[in-house]
Amino acid sequence: MGSVRIGVSGWRYAHWRGRFYPRGLPQRRELEHVAACFPTVELDGSFYSLQRPASYLAWRDATPPGFVFAVKGGRFVTHMKRLRGVRTPLANFFASGVLALGDRLGPVLWQLPERQRCDLGVLEEFLDLLPRSTGAAARLAREHDDKLKTDPWTDVDADRPLLHALEARHRSFEDPAALRLLREHGVALAVSEGAGQWPLLDHVTADLVYVRLHGRTRLYASGYAPRTLDEWARRVRAWHDDGHDVVVYLDNDGDAHAPHDALALTDRLTDVAVPAAA
Image (cartoon, rainbow, N blue to C red; front, side):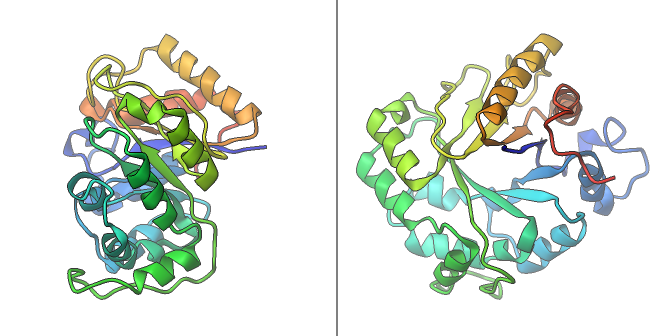
């Protein structure tokens, strides 16, 4: 039977202070507060730039055992290189400290631009490069180049499975050949709701189902109505009942909707959702 983890995308939002974070809570303790409310969070800063091992260690230490970070892959790989010729950029990404999360490391998300169409050859080459375990990621990380501006982290405390999800935002990724490639590589095609700005691709391609909820009516801004949360709860339950592990990240951070909607969705799935640490 699969597991269900519900959380938020990112946590460092000034406008959450006093709305979700208690007034007076020091910024350095905001992740600790998130980890007390949710069993997972999507680490967003890694998308914009390579982070440092010290940061990953601090994030790991701020969370309890059993907590899981989903880590967004770098936009240099997805938006600048468009998945082409990315062996060394992937090595730099994994050498930047991702592996320092240890047993807190969950799936890695690769978010594509909205206009990027599916090129089957490029997709297959990229999927072939993705490490399927932390040990394989460490070996790839040792191929980093001098563009890595920090001390590399290429060690692991244990060799664990490493899962990946691809957030495609173009309908061409519904090509049966693309779905077959994803299934062959065990990579999840993310179910991503973006206020109608891109298609919601609902195809299960792996044991993992990765869901991102960016807003139903306004991107990153609108809250989810109770009936809409009921709808998502039914879908999550169905995936779980089919034996899938499901992660759901609310990314409608405007007006602090994301954490409150994530808690409301969790309330609808208390019998199957992994609870936050007490």
